[in-house]
Amino acid sequence: MNTDRDDFIIAIRSAFLQKGAQQTFSLLVLMLFSLILLILGSFNFKGIDYIKIGVKEVVYRSSFIVSVPENFFKKTYVVTNDHFIFYNEYKKIKSELEVLKSKNLIKKFIILENYRLKSIIDDYLIISDEIIAKILIDKQSPFSRSIIVNKGTKHNIKLGMTVLEGQYLVGKVIEVNFLTSRVLLLSDLNSKIPVSIEPQGIQSILSGTGKDDAIIQYFKKNNIIEDDAVVYTSGSGGIFKAGIPIGKIKNLNEEKRVSLFSDFTQLSFVKILSYEKARIKAAAEAKLKAEKKAKIKAEEARIKAEEAIKVEKARIKAEEAIKVEKARIKAEEAIKAEKARIKAEEDIRLKTEEEKIFKELNLKYGSKCRKKIFNKLYKVGTPEYRACVLNKGIKIN
View 1 (cartoon, rainbow, N blue to C red):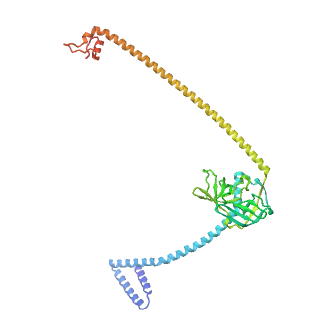
View 2: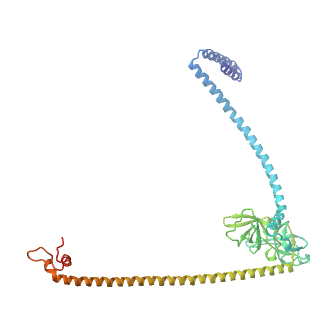
View 3: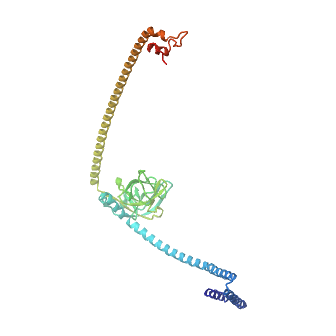
């Protein structure tokens, strides 16, 4: 009965939703319809039960369908709002991360170098004063990338000095005039710089492409260079100080492209400086390295010579063993030939003796074995005849 009351209440509420004269009529009809259903339901008619089930299904399904748009818009609003919140937080975190990366690149390089080489800072002892220069002309062609700055010999600019934008390497000074200088950018086709790829510690050469990036050249194929690995100057050759950040690796098929940290199309001011190297110490270290390399090469040559001598002795020993084996085989073959000869001679001797015995017995018993007109014996010369003679004239069954 409780279920029937619920259906009755739902019907009344639906009736009140109508307007005007239709509302009164709909209410009366629904009340009458509900009373009839209640009265007939007490008699347990199957038809009434089916009608009640159908009404319930229609009401429930309609309620669900009506609530779908509302739930959809509510969910869409929540998702959209969360998206904008997360996006704003993402932009904020990304900007903070870029700032931290730019500040910690040099520190990261020093830590990695300390783990592998213990000390690299002793390689350069004196740093010149920084000279801030403004870019006057940006020379860009399909093959060259260079800039003209407003500092020259008057401002103590020299050939080979390092050019930076902030902490990032831009290039080096290749031409100096009184008031201006020309700087060759890293992206120029003629730019070749020894670099170190961290954290793998791979040594290679960075070459310009003539565009706004560079490429890694002359590295071993078995060296695995990962995406986003950071490229620094290695300090080899004394051109640049070790540890100046350059860019990040961006693999493109088999090419190892480097996305440079500095955007050369947006350069306005650069920083020019030089690193004075401890020449005496460097020369001594170079001499020690050369001596060590010479000793290592001499030791390697001695080891190779000893190995070659061992290989030659082993070859001679093997050849002698082969000769001995061949001689043994020949001796065995000679023994076999001698045995065969003796056996052949023995066979000949036995055959000769057998033939002699046959001839003697043939004289005595040939008539007993020879075939005649009235006896069934053997024809002369046949194996049967020979066997009969050797059997002293006794016929063989």
